[in-house]
Length: 225
Image 1 (tube, one colour):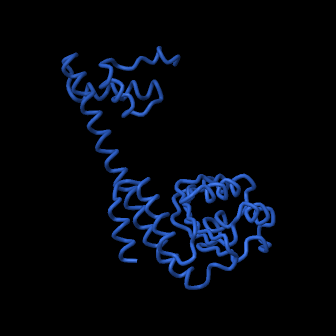
Image 2: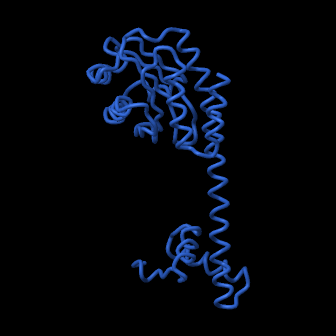
Image 3: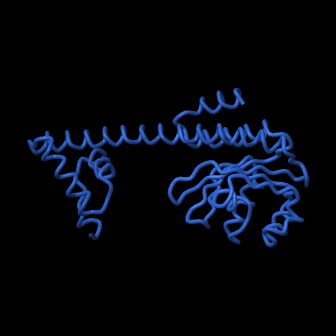
């Protein structure tokens, strides 16, 4: 677990890198885990695969989103941990069980990673052999999921901070262009950017980026607004 924590820390600020690191660590750390995926679930039904160790987890994630049932959905909405010892024989999700076993899944474990408003995340572990996961496997995976939750939250937070700083720099550049070109104050330049943003229903940072790249204030008329 200490090795896993250090490995995840190396990906700080990189959300996609953290997601991929978690899936690789899970397969290498949890006994009998052959594949791993991380899924985001939106509005209680749409499953979006974010990272996977192979094609199989992505197919299983897509299957759950398509039929609206499965252990990943239960893990993020109803329980923090869902273990499926024998996928084909499981009666909780009959349609999912039949189709997932046909894909080659024998056993699964799903762990809730986070809950943020209407978006949730789950860590999913797979084995092609029924009965592959026992209580020890579950406990190790539970500890890894706890480390993964903290690492992912940290990476997302740092990514947001970096994006915020980048946006601030863009807005500053755009203000500087307007101030120099039209002899405006900083407040007047910002007012122009804010009005264009509102009139075009575009983010302020996007307006600033276009102005910085083209040297021209975006024209609402040109967009058909």
